[in-house]
Image (cartoon, rainbow, N blue to C red; front, side, top):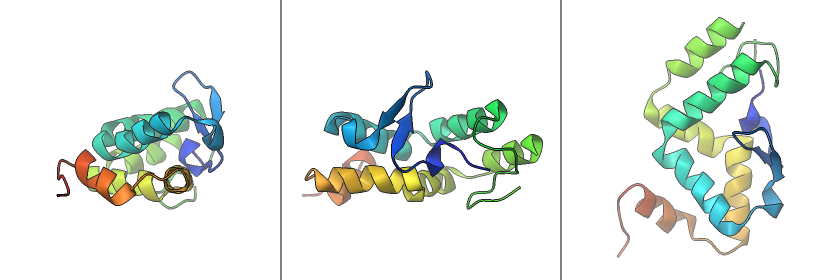
Length: 121
């Protein structure tokens, strides 16, 4: 089952608007990256929303792919915060956001440390 996290070229907003990753502002990309790290509850909510809407597919969602809406939601909502963060950051969408940020000169390691509450000195 696919979700918005499987789309590497675009971000789907809460209103359903698709924005190309390359067309997003750097601050919007940084906010998205920050949300993936700080708000695993939002990642969970987006996954459940995508599954409920049936917009992306009809097979069970698993963290790394494949096969019923109820089981898919159970799979998503059983993930820990760390698993949700890892999933979001290593998904095709997460990788595309990170790649675009690096391309624009953003230092991801330092940004991640600051977002996570550990400031590099």
